[in-house]
Image (cartoon, rainbow, N blue to C red; front, side, top):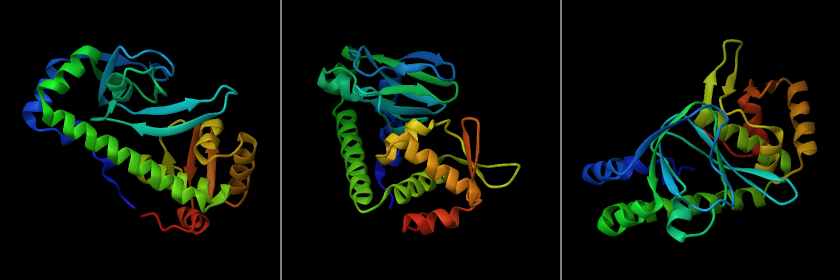
Length: 228
C-alpha cells in the first residue's frame, strides 16, 4: 500500500514557493553518524535535506529506542517543533554525509504566514505522515513479532535496497538491532533471535552494521503481505 508520505516536501511545492524557502536557508554539511536534531531540545531551525539519508529515532526513558522514519533528499525535518513551539520529539542522525538547508524557526513561521501555498503543502504532508503511521499501527496490530520484522525488512529493501555483489539486496541504512526492535515493538533479544533464525535458514545475511536480504519471497510469506 502506497501513501503520499513518500513524496518529498520540496517536490510538492510550487516553483516560487520553493525558491522563497531556499532563499531563507543556510547550507550545512553533516558527516556520517552526526546528530542533526536531538530529541527534547528546543527548536532553533528546520532542515531541508538536499542530499544523503537520515534516520529518525525516538528514545524512552528506559533506553528503548524506535526507528520512526528514514528521511532523504527533498524532505523537511524539525517542522513539527518549529510550528508547535514544543521541544523536538525525535533525534535525527545522518546515515551518510548529509547536505541540508537550515531555516531559522522564526523565519520559517513567517514564511508560512506570507505564503499560504507552503502552509497547505506542509499540512498535507503532516496528514499523509499521520495516515501512514496509522496504517502501520493497524498492520502491526494483526501481526506477531516475526511477521512485523519481515514486513519492516521488505519495506527497507524496497525503499533503501541496493544489489549486493555477493548476491541479494543490501539494506543501505545502518540500523542497529535495538532500532529494528523498537520499530517492531519487540525486545532487542527477540529480534536478535529472529535474525539468527533467518540467517540459519538462508533468508538474510548479516554483516557489521549491514543486512542483506537473500530470499525476499520467504519474507513475503512470513509477513502475509505481498510487498512489491
